[in-house]
Amino acid sequence: MRRLVLGIVGLTFLLVGCARPSQENTSRLDLIKKRNELICGVSGKIPGFSFLNSNGTYQGLDVDICKAFAAAFLGSSKKVQFRPLTAPERFTAIRTGEIDLLSRNTTFNLSRDSSKGNGLIFAPVIFHDGQGLMVRKSIKVNKLEERAGKSICVGSGTTTEQNINDEFEAKSLPYRPIKYQDLNQVVAGYLQGRCAAMTSDRSQLAAAKSGFKNPKAHIILDDVLSKEPLAPASPGGDQQLADIVRWVIYTLFSAEEYEITTQNLQQKLVKSLKETQYYIQ
Image (cartoon, rainbow, N blue to C red):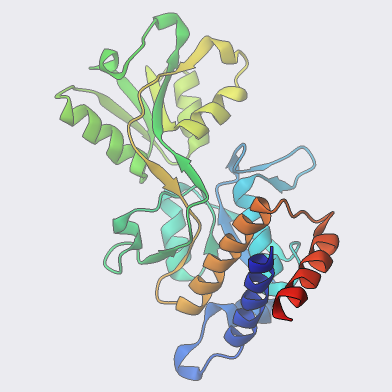
């Protein structure tokens, strides 16, 4: 608990220090503070990660991460605008400044993190996933090899697209990819019978399946085709913003570890400060 308090204090000093960068080293944080609003890129179409609920507000893990950033930068989790983006749009949006941060179930990998690739700076991983395949239960398929020569619906411009291609090539199996811009289109293509299977992160397959009219009529195969460490990302070259983003995530990890919530925050803080004073004395 003492370490958590000191971590929060350190984060506060970091935020204050970054608020007045030199002219040679300005950060996007200045624009966020001046605008008094964080623009956060999300999918907006994946239950559990980011989607519109019945009252028209965004909900999910990626949404909560955006709210945490807004609270750290601007003092309120409500000062955030969610920008729904397709997979092909997301990297262009962050490079061009259309969004401040990306919190959109995005896989952290070398090509995206490197300066010669997408040039992003990734925060710590918040969700570990893996790619899978979903098929109709009625066709009685149990493994990927039984989909050889069949069509598979997949999202364009994603690691999912590359992974499925690599997997079938490695096994010398033919297949026909049917590509779509976002998960909703992939799901629609699959349900309309345009492909014999659909592939995505297993969490996304489960989310999609939960919304089907008859979820039990579909199964997710046991095959796990990849490792998908999902993480938020900030613009490349902006180390000040990246440092803050990283430590906001670490602080969230610590808060969960010590079971700190908005309801018991004040009580935990008072107790921790008393313990900190004891150690200092």
